[in-house]
Image (tube, rainbow, N blue to C red; front, side):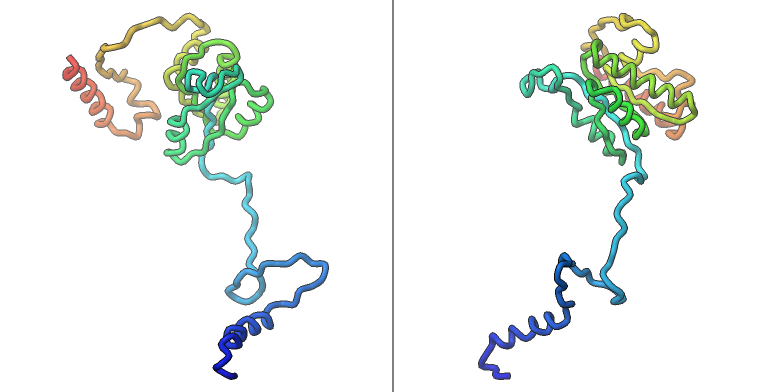
Length: 221
Protein backbone atom coordinates (compact mmCIF):
# COMPACT_ATOMS: atom_id res chain seq x y z
CA UNK A 1 0.00 0.00 0.00
CA UNK A 2 1.24 3.42 -0.84
CA UNK A 3 2.42 5.11 2.35
CA UNK A 4 1.81 8.43 0.67
CA UNK A 5 -1.94 7.86 1.21
CA UNK A 6 -2.31 8.00 5.03
CA UNK A 7 -6.11 8.05 4.79
CA UNK A 8 -5.99 4.50 3.41
CA UNK A 9 -4.02 3.36 6.46
CA UNK A 10 -6.72 4.77 8.73
CA UNK A 11 -9.46 3.14 6.69
CA UNK A 12 -8.02 -0.38 6.83
CA UNK A 13 -8.88 -1.11 10.53
CA UNK A 14 -12.44 0.05 9.96
CA UNK A 15 -12.82 -2.26 6.98
CA UNK A 16 -11.51 -5.22 8.98
CA UNK A 17 -13.89 -4.43 11.87
CA UNK A 18 -16.84 -4.22 9.49
CA UNK A 19 -15.95 -7.62 8.04
CA UNK A 20 -15.99 -9.22 11.51
CA UNK A 21 -19.35 -7.82 12.56
CA UNK A 22 -22.50 -9.88 11.84
CA UNK A 23 -24.49 -8.61 8.87
CA UNK A 24 -27.62 -6.62 9.71
CA UNK A 25 -30.90 -8.42 9.29
CA UNK A 26 -33.98 -6.69 8.02
CA UNK A 27 -36.92 -6.29 10.38
CA UNK A 28 -34.86 -7.16 13.50
CA UNK A 29 -33.89 -4.43 16.00
CA UNK A 30 -30.18 -3.75 16.24
CA UNK A 31 -28.38 -5.56 19.08
CA UNK A 32 -25.42 -4.23 21.03
CA UNK A 33 -23.06 -7.18 21.43
CA UNK A 34 -21.17 -7.35 24.69
CA UNK A 35 -17.65 -8.81 24.98
CA UNK A 36 -17.53 -12.44 26.10
CA UNK A 37 -14.92 -14.53 27.81
CA UNK A 38 -15.52 -17.74 25.90
CA UNK A 39 -16.97 -16.52 22.64
CA UNK A 40 -20.24 -18.34 23.25
CA UNK A 41 -22.36 -15.28 22.64
CA UNK A 42 -23.32 -12.00 24.30
CA UNK A 43 -23.25 -11.76 28.06
CA UNK A 44 -26.64 -11.82 29.78
CA UNK A 45 -27.45 -10.71 33.31
CA UNK A 46 -30.55 -11.86 35.13
CA UNK A 47 -32.77 -8.91 36.04
CA UNK A 48 -32.71 -8.04 39.75
CA UNK A 49 -35.52 -9.43 41.83
CA UNK A 50 -37.34 -6.45 43.38
CA UNK A 51 -38.74 -8.72 46.09
CA UNK A 52 -35.27 -9.48 47.45
CA UNK A 53 -33.62 -6.98 49.77
CA UNK A 54 -31.27 -8.12 52.51
CA UNK A 55 -31.33 -4.98 54.67
CA UNK A 56 -34.05 -3.61 56.97
CA UNK A 57 -36.66 -1.25 55.59
CA UNK A 58 -37.88 1.34 58.11
CA UNK A 59 -40.98 3.49 57.81
CA UNK A 60 -40.94 7.07 59.11
CA UNK A 61 -44.27 8.78 59.73
CA UNK A 62 -44.31 12.28 58.26
CA UNK A 63 -45.23 15.26 60.42
CA UNK A 64 -47.83 17.90 59.47
CA UNK A 65 -46.45 21.16 58.12
CA UNK A 66 -43.50 22.04 55.95
CA UNK A 67 -40.90 22.11 58.71
CA UNK A 68 -40.23 25.79 58.02
CA UNK A 69 -43.08 27.54 59.77
CA UNK A 70 -45.16 27.71 56.60
CA UNK A 71 -42.53 29.56 54.57
CA UNK A 72 -42.37 26.74 51.98
CA UNK A 73 -46.03 25.70 51.86
CA UNK A 74 -49.11 26.78 53.75
CA UNK A 75 -51.39 24.01 52.51
CA UNK A 76 -53.02 21.91 55.19
CA UNK A 77 -52.08 18.67 53.42
CA UNK A 78 -48.36 19.41 53.55
CA UNK A 79 -46.09 17.18 55.62
CA UNK A 80 -42.38 16.59 55.95
CA UNK A 81 -39.75 14.28 57.41
CA UNK A 82 -36.64 15.87 58.89
CA UNK A 83 -33.52 14.87 56.96
CA UNK A 84 -31.76 13.97 60.22
CA UNK A 85 -34.16 11.07 60.80
CA UNK A 86 -33.59 9.69 57.31
CA UNK A 87 -29.81 10.00 57.68
CA UNK A 88 -30.01 8.38 61.12
CA UNK A 89 -31.75 5.32 59.67
CA UNK A 90 -29.65 5.14 56.52
CA UNK A 91 -26.42 5.43 58.52
CA UNK A 92 -27.31 2.08 60.08
CA UNK A 93 -27.67 0.52 56.61
CA UNK A 94 -31.45 0.62 56.33
CA UNK A 95 -33.73 1.97 53.65
CA UNK A 96 -36.49 4.49 54.46
CA UNK A 97 -40.08 4.44 53.26
CA UNK A 98 -42.12 7.58 54.11
CA UNK A 99 -45.46 6.93 55.79
CA UNK A 100 -47.41 10.05 54.88
CA UNK A 101 -49.67 10.73 57.84
CA UNK A 102 -52.72 11.75 55.75
CA UNK A 103 -52.53 9.19 52.95
CA UNK A 104 -55.38 6.66 52.48
CA UNK A 105 -55.49 3.88 55.05
CA UNK A 106 -55.17 1.09 52.47
CA UNK A 107 -51.97 2.63 51.14
CA UNK A 108 -50.64 3.06 54.67
CA UNK A 109 -51.31 -0.60 55.47
CA UNK A 110 -49.72 -1.69 52.21
CA UNK A 111 -46.54 0.19 53.10
CA UNK A 112 -46.53 -1.21 56.63
CA UNK A 113 -46.62 -4.73 55.23
CA UNK A 114 -43.28 -4.02 53.50
CA UNK A 115 -41.48 -2.74 56.60
CA UNK A 116 -39.24 -4.18 59.29
CA UNK A 117 -39.82 -1.35 61.76
CA UNK A 118 -41.21 2.16 62.27
CA UNK A 119 -39.92 5.49 63.57
CA UNK A 120 -42.05 8.25 65.13
CA UNK A 121 -40.33 11.64 64.85
CA UNK A 122 -40.33 14.64 67.10
CA UNK A 123 -42.60 17.60 66.48
CA UNK A 124 -45.55 19.38 68.01
CA UNK A 125 -48.81 17.87 66.70
CA UNK A 126 -50.78 15.93 69.32
CA UNK A 127 -54.27 15.65 67.83
CA UNK A 128 -56.32 15.31 64.68
CA UNK A 129 -55.48 13.11 61.70
CA UNK A 130 -51.83 12.86 62.71
CA UNK A 131 -52.65 11.44 66.13
CA UNK A 132 -55.13 8.99 64.61
CA UNK A 133 -52.46 7.77 62.17
CA UNK A 134 -49.93 7.33 64.97
CA UNK A 135 -52.50 5.27 66.90
CA UNK A 136 -53.19 3.12 63.82
CA UNK A 137 -49.49 2.48 63.20
CA UNK A 138 -48.86 1.77 66.89
CA UNK A 139 -51.65 -0.80 66.91
CA UNK A 140 -50.08 -2.43 63.85
CA UNK A 141 -46.77 -2.65 65.73
CA UNK A 142 -48.50 -4.28 68.70
CA UNK A 143 -50.31 -6.78 66.49
CA UNK A 144 -47.10 -7.82 64.73
CA UNK A 145 -45.24 -8.37 67.99
CA UNK A 146 -48.18 -10.18 69.60
CA UNK A 147 -48.15 -12.53 66.62
CA UNK A 148 -44.52 -13.42 67.37
CA UNK A 149 -42.93 -11.35 64.61
CA UNK A 150 -40.43 -8.80 65.96
CA UNK A 151 -41.36 -5.36 64.70
CA UNK A 152 -39.46 -2.57 66.49
CA UNK A 153 -40.69 0.97 67.04
CA UNK A 154 -38.42 3.92 67.77
CA UNK A 155 -40.32 6.90 69.17
CA UNK A 156 -38.42 10.12 69.77
CA UNK A 157 -39.53 13.23 71.63
CA UNK A 158 -43.10 13.89 70.42
CA UNK A 159 -43.30 10.30 69.23
CA UNK A 160 -42.61 9.04 72.74
CA UNK A 161 -45.17 11.46 74.18
CA UNK A 162 -47.82 10.17 71.79
CA UNK A 163 -47.04 6.57 72.70
CA UNK A 164 -47.45 7.50 76.37
CA UNK A 165 -50.85 9.03 75.61
CA UNK A 166 -51.94 5.96 73.65
CA UNK A 167 -50.77 3.40 76.22
CA UNK A 168 -52.24 5.31 79.16
CA UNK A 169 -55.45 6.09 77.23
CA UNK A 170 -55.16 9.57 78.68
CA UNK A 171 -54.59 12.41 76.23
CA UNK A 172 -53.94 14.76 79.16
CA UNK A 173 -51.22 12.70 80.79
CA UNK A 174 -48.52 15.11 79.67
CA UNK A 175 -47.70 18.01 81.96
CA UNK A 176 -46.11 21.29 81.00
CA UNK A 177 -42.63 21.62 82.45
CA UNK A 178 -39.95 24.23 81.85
CA UNK A 179 -36.74 22.21 81.52
CA UNK A 180 -34.50 25.12 80.60
CA UNK A 181 -31.35 25.23 82.75
CA UNK A 182 -32.44 22.09 84.60
CA UNK A 183 -29.32 19.91 84.74
CA UNK A 184 -29.97 16.34 85.86
CA UNK A 185 -28.09 13.08 86.22
CA UNK A 186 -28.75 9.91 84.27
CA UNK A 187 -30.28 7.16 86.39
CA UNK A 188 -30.51 3.60 85.06
CA UNK A 189 -33.17 1.42 86.68
CA UNK A 190 -31.94 -2.04 87.62
CA UNK A 191 -33.88 -3.78 84.85
CA UNK A 192 -32.64 -1.45 82.10
CA UNK A 193 -29.27 -3.20 81.82
CA UNK A 194 -31.05 -6.45 80.96
CA UNK A 195 -32.95 -5.03 77.99
CA UNK A 196 -32.04 -5.48 74.34
CA UNK A 197 -30.64 -1.94 74.11
CA UNK A 198 -27.90 -2.47 76.70
CA UNK A 199 -27.40 -6.24 76.85
CA UNK A 200 -24.67 -6.12 74.18
CA UNK A 201 -22.94 -3.07 75.67
CA UNK A 202 -21.39 -4.84 78.63
CA UNK A 203 -21.45 -3.49 82.15
CA UNK A 204 -19.06 -0.60 81.73
CA UNK A 205 -20.65 1.57 79.07
CA UNK A 206 -23.93 2.41 80.86
CA UNK A 207 -21.95 3.34 83.97
CA UNK A 208 -19.63 5.48 81.86
CA UNK A 209 -22.65 7.30 80.45
CA UNK A 210 -23.98 7.80 83.94
CA UNK A 211 -20.67 9.23 85.15
CA UNK A 212 -20.50 11.56 82.16
CA UNK A 213 -23.95 12.90 83.09
CA UNK A 214 -22.79 13.48 86.67
CA UNK A 215 -19.69 15.36 85.47
CA UNK A 216 -21.79 17.47 83.13
CA UNK A 217 -24.20 18.34 85.93
CA UNK A 218 -21.33 19.33 88.21
CA UNK A 219 -19.76 21.50 85.51
CA UNK A 220 -23.14 23.18 84.87
CA UNK A 221 -23.68 23.94 88.53
